[in-house]
Length: 142
Image 1: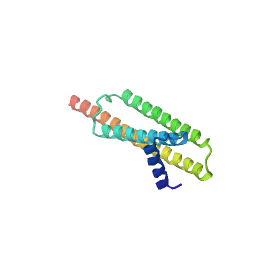
Image 2: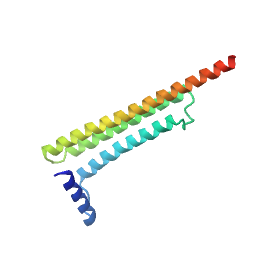
Image 3: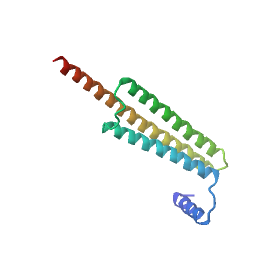
Image 4: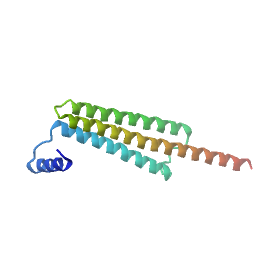
């Protein structure tokens, strides 16, 4: 079944109110989790770059943000892997199973890439915060 065929099947299911089977639900959930992880990472990185997050003013705040980022990334990764494993347990063709594995790998790579973006943005934000403090200390000494 090609992508176009599956789009036609999905539209037909919507028209005649045929519920999605569990494999389709797992496939969609896996995609939603990935999309949310990427959107959250982008939003947080842009907010850091624009210096809109005022709560990150101390080193400890940044450490907590690093830990939170890694914790949620681990949750996303586990959820994506669980969806994929539950999905491939259902009967399907070998080609479809290979597609699931390939897509999961790409999704994990994308989540990792945007996590790296957030971690780099946090590092830059921490560096700017520390530089501002040093400049303030230097100006107070003079």
